[in-house]
Length: 415
Image 1: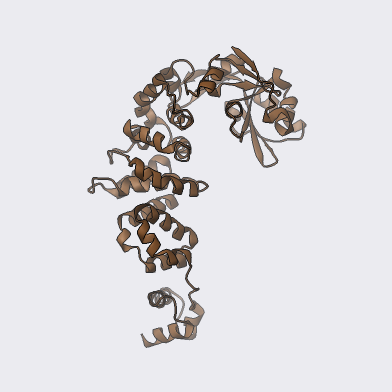
Image 2: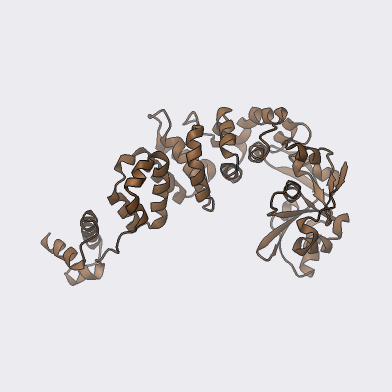
């Protein structure tokens, strides 16, 4: 065990986090743990502050509710409760020890020491604890040193940590984006060796980590490592496609588009997968079956399935992207779809984007004809009216959206 006193005030030395810690008995009973301590020591902005506490979940909840906090029992079966304050969340987890693990979940018992709690965690740099004044407790004796050396290392034997929960393989590569200049061979070799076991991990858990990899600062190199070592194959767990490789130069074009879409849940993954399928060298693969397999694997929505199909069509049929298609996207779906098409086309054919730039940037005028206009001409509501409206609109779009209402109605009268 190592104690480090830096005499530097951490973000939790005041404010809500400080008040929560005091309510829960101070550092004798409760400490800041994990990512917040790691990021603070690395001079990285601290976004989430989590606590480890000797108090049982129900006891912590009662204390905090009595202190006036909005507390929810989210994750209470695993020892975690969540405090909501000023638009932020704070998780408090009771100290625990793993009793039984099966590669997906752990059966835990509450209690034990800071050391017990630390040795059930994944990486040494994530097993650091801090009191309210920034005095750091390092139960493994290795975390602070590894943080200084910028090396990502499993606590104890990598294979043991991985077999406890195989999601740690994907978490390893997510964190590796910040530690890729000094790779621990034992850790990365174990991740590659056991990656085939990712098929037992739920798609939702994997996707949560994978999207963070796509948005990491060193994403290109990490994705390349995943591809070269067939870890990506294990992540997708699809026998219908034999590789998930994208060239580094192509990934470089893709990365800015990832960041433009970072706030759209799962869309970065959808975008990456679209290119994987569309650009696969084997043109005989059954894209429809692959899409169905991936949607099922990651429990994606029908809307995500539609977006995946849409993207693949745009990529594989870029010759059919015309000003008419863009205008219809504006009319039927709005700015988001047009922006998506522009992003995809900028990756595969930026010259064409420049040619069509006016149509991408300027939405068409409002279609001047409505159902009421057709009623006045004697049409009744129903499929026929919809069909007639589509005929008029197609003619209007093909005439650069210039005809006004009277010209559109004259056109359909003449039909």
